[in-house]
Image (tube, each protein chain N blue to C red):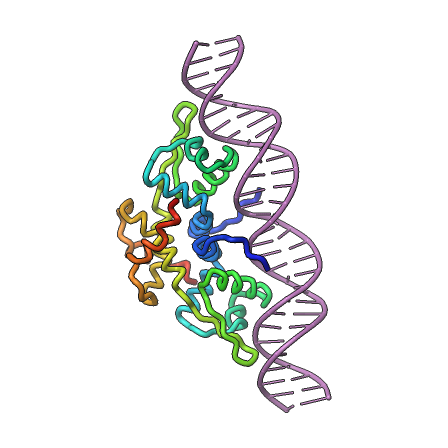
Length: 111
Length: 111
DNA sequence: CTGATACTTCACCATGTAGCGAAGTATTGT
DNA sequence: ACAATACTTCGCTACATGGTGAAGTATCAG
């Protein structure tokens, strides 16, 4: 699978653009080490579909996968998210509203 | 053309996933009010191509367009970026590295 | 009015993405 | 050995994205 040479930050933002993938990341934050099936079950998503999402998240470096026996445990790897954050941070001086209010505003996305 | 009802934050991250669009945003930050042609010229991009990028950025609410006569001046509108930032902010406790270092790290993306 | 300029829309192409069922591989349980 | 489990890969469909050139619309200059 030849990945076109999109930059790391391209892949990060692209991975974050999908609500299913953001859900996966939030879930992993609260429950690290979940298996592929455990991640797929509550999303009414078949395994091949979950595999593709995990591939995207892996390519973006947002998760790591470790196989033990026949089960794969998935974990967060937040480095690339820091870079995405840093990119957005460059607009800081243009902002006027406090971030704390906005964290509450997007909280509903977690469900 | 049936527009899927993707959420605002989907559109924001998706818009930010393209290097050309991030370039446009950075350029507008330093030179607000540039016209469509002025934005397209240094990118070796034809006007229809630029139009599509501006449509994506508009749909994401990241820019505003104001027509005066026959020229359109484009400006930043950073609200949605704050929401994207807020989403990423939720991982804050998992982070260990200082953001300031990372801001420098992604600085090259601005060219 | 006529022509140039600035943008907009249209039709099209190539490629990428998200999902599925089916089939394959590797590990565990009996 | 055999079957079930957990993932992985394959082939396919449907649709979105990023780009182009050509044609259309609106404004400005002479």
